Length: 508
Ligand code: NOJ
Image (cartoon, rainbow, N blue to C red; front, side, top):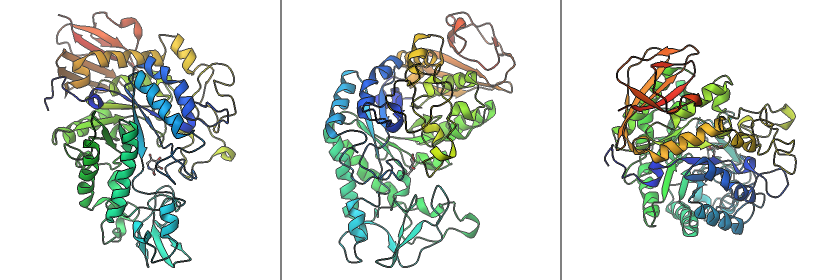
């Protein structure tokens, strides 16, 4: 793989747009987003210029974790539509040149999945060994509320393991029948024509078979959850399933561990194609913090010659504009950085509108993990219904009369206009979508890096302070894009106003 040429796969060159189906758009009028809603707004994605969409889970589910508790992997939950709706959406996306990724939740099922219902039926049920049952729990804690990761099943007198809610029992990947069944799930959707998957917490599938207690000083840190090297073997089996299909299908892993080196270990030629690096979601609004996050991702991915997935926001994190104190100018700078780094950016629906988290009153809170604010519905129009017929399942994010797709698309100076310009610039520029990255030394408060590749040198400067920054002078530069629109195409005068970013090319 050359670092400077344009021989990249679509999933390296492209940009993926994450849709949280409940919140995106509602075609049925029940206040919950669905597949017809997505279909009706595909042209927004075309307008924006993304290459693929990833749908958070659409499968039948009791919705204890809003779809991340799957009760049937090979159908669509009626709240979202039917398999026919899905096929229609896939066709329509294909006609617009948009790829489609699904969310494959391999670590756990719903407790209402027939496999688990059978498993808990009796100790000698053939499905018993599809899950992880023990007479005594160890000290592992679950996510969300840090309660015990084990629940006693009164009828059969044993405990089952669940990394997340008690309604999300962990599958036993040691059992070859489980692996086979989960491969068949992939095949079901690959046969239907999907371009790939985002693999939910896929690093957790291989538990240490001894299920050792977490060390006393690290109880709740879940160290034992991802220490079994068989995970890598099972990732290779998963990769073989995808490689059996034509057309560059892709598997993006959600490997949510802090060390980028550990993330990279799950990716490569015969494992996951790529994984998310969440370092940017953890970085505060500080040039130095961004710089070290980027340096960590670069080092970890270059060492294994793998390609990073980059993300600022998703359905699990507070939206980045909110994290950065609510200033839209910061969200603009962050977008410029995200879309000019080396790697595949994943946008979270609504970030292109500069959406902030919603304020969700206590009596409207529904998520066990407290993640409702970032899952507020997308406003499509300025009128009070904002393009939704019924009352949406969560309250609106702030300023929906202004921060809606229709208003922002009309205004070329809007943040949506900036995302569009960035996406088009990136798509047309081989250096930006395929080239190498070199971090540069810069004065405090300034983030600077070069991209080097087939279309020449590009320089990105991002001023994280409110004060103008004088940029060390080395040559004549032309502004390809600025977060302050007026400067596009001008010669760069060596000064970057407060909280702005520019993408530059050599002037000669
Ligand atoms: C990660 C998903 O992104 C999150 O929303 C979910 O709650 C957990 N995995 C469990 O599936």
